Length: 83
Image (cartoon, rainbow, N blue to C red; front, top):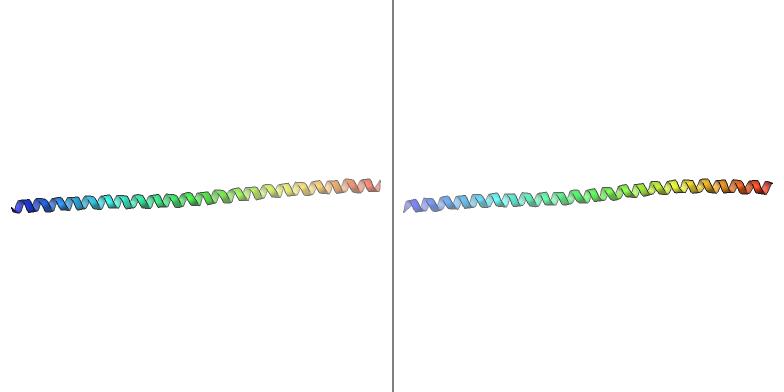
């Protein structure tokens, strides 16, 4: 009889050890998945920020071109008025 008890307790220990390993692995998986989501969100925000900055630069360039063109037009009009 004592042998059977030892066998059962040993099996219980093994099962509980396996359960701990599985739960630990699952927790690590969940943590990694959450970290990946956070990284993805940060990357998305960074890409959006970069695209906004790029658009701002392009708008600035267009504004400069327009102001130069308007200055040219003003000069031409002034020359015509003088002549």
